[in-house]
Image (tube, rainbow, N blue to C red):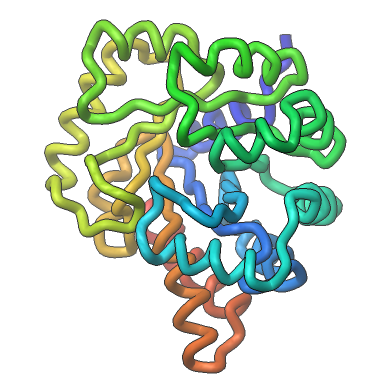
Length: 267
């Protein structure tokens, strides 16, 4: 059986002895065209691109990502636009795997089957549902697998060992470890050392599974966490877009520089 595009990314990064760099941006922020251009621009230095679908009440997100979401919605973002962005991004030379991240209620309203069909057609490789925990997500995860789309399970510091074992066993190619109990973009309340200690305990449960760390990762903290399989940076990118708009700069150029700088810190 051939490896999925997501598995191939982790395999390559392990061979290069570094973590995979995952970035998160909100689809349609600051607008549809620039959102696509940002993805194209950062692609060279990224291993996996997470794209969030804008939500009017993003409960798991901190202020920086909320601002990005509201901006995209204000600019008329619709669910169909996310597939258009992904489809156009996948036309570039050597595109990276795409993981859509968002809230299940939007998928439910859109229709699960219709959503997965659109994902497959546009070239989506994975899905993270923030508000659909295990085991409630089992049926949807099975549907994803049938379409060869990775459903990414979430783990947190409060997940019990017994539950964690079951989630990891049920998971597809990767799991997302939420490093601290906070919304996204919060200041690291836990030391990188403690995060890695928790992370290593998780890895011992199943060494074969790829586990990425997200929440609170910035230019300052990324190098101290590079023993992980992958690291997700999101809020800092969303803040970069907001800052560039305030300062009348080009967000595409700003994010390209920011992501290049993040990549240098993990190689």
